[in-house]
Image (cartoon, rainbow, N blue to C red):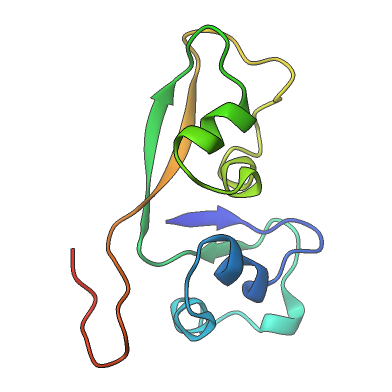
Length: 111
């Protein structure tokens, strides 16, 4: 899954917010210098894909993040063009969905 870096973000932060080992995020972005991450730069987040979610009456980004058991900023990160104050019923947002479970280094990543 690809995201756009924001001001102040880091590969370490992405590893935390997506619950991924930092080395996995580094390896997926080997052409990125971690100390030179710039706003708007495309960053690869391994083990995730984007799904669509159609907004319903009463939905908020906070409520959706709770429903999908994810940090609010993870949801905001993949929906940077969405104004959270102007959500409309029927509009679609993106939901980052984990493709696999991570296991210890002795076990492979499985789908």
